[in-house]
Length: 442
Ligand code: GUN
Ligand code: ZN
Image (cartoon, rainbow, N blue to C red; front, side, top):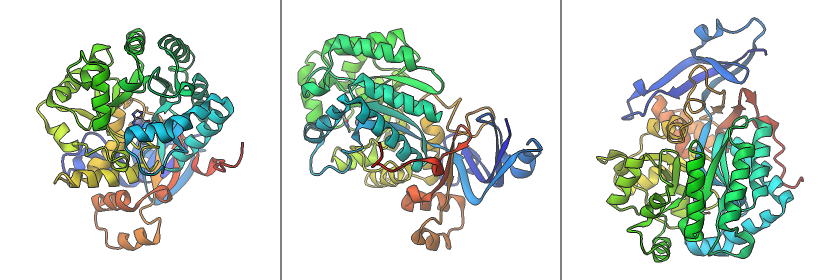
């Protein structure tokens, strides 16, 4: 296949940056290029060196003066909540009952699932996100639709149908056995098919009987290279109701431990109100705590202790996510802007190098996929985002006074959104201009 040489200011991370000045954590080339062959990165770095490796008939795409980074990774998002986003006035449990469960019941209709799956991945890409860890609805067909849509685009996604067998309307309930059977069938069909990955997805302890969490644990043991994703310790009323349902357990995290659902491939959304014991248990098991700032603010859930969690003696592995539709924006730039404010309310600062590490390599490491995405290392998949820090008049004016890469990144995070995303590449293919984003069609 013909080589593609994508030229621009190339930035990616080799490790977690320790400070705003820790440029040694990054690979940055002012005159850089990424050479792509067969959907993979041959080399990224200095343009003059990289271009020498390109075939004579290489196609050159020049994005100068824009930044080229690894595509963003969203570690927790709900595909069936595209029409829940921006629902007024409730905290978590009322929000689920009033808006979310009725909306998710529409996914009984497979046609609806296919439409929303298509629009969801269009929106993800438009915002620069090339990989998501996504929840589908309880209906097996919603996960089928999602994987089929992702496969058609050659996108790497981690996803699963939610398992939920109590405390919700019948239209969004399965049973322990049906959820086991459907999940198993989906894993057999989709896990590791192309770039697809399956996540065993008990929604949260409140909507699962002990029998269903048992079934989820059995699946996690049968398929140890699948992810597990669920919610943990998001809201005080949720915690109280959950503990009433599992009176034998000492705390919320212990429920998931008991059923074998913690571990390095387990992604726990929210983790806001953890005790020290729970944080230790998550740390010791290598589990991932997923910070969802726009959602935590929107639903009034609380402030995630981003720095405290990573600085504790037993640090937590942290990922960051949009959590649409409790979250209010698909953009991981908007997400990190809100993360900055959540952290500021706790008297600390989130440095911009750390932000961009987090939504690329940091999330890839947390999701155990950094051998494929989240960096521009040779041999990884060519998922890229091209960012324009002067995309709007406000941004362009502020850019006139920007003097460093860290300042530019901070501007992008504070003022940027989908308008700052000039192009997106999925497995080496430019896709942002390629979408049929008209929600009125099919
Ligand atoms: N807890 C259980 N389900 C959900 C959900 O869909 N969104 C959020 N934010 N929390 C949940
Ligand atoms: Zn969620």
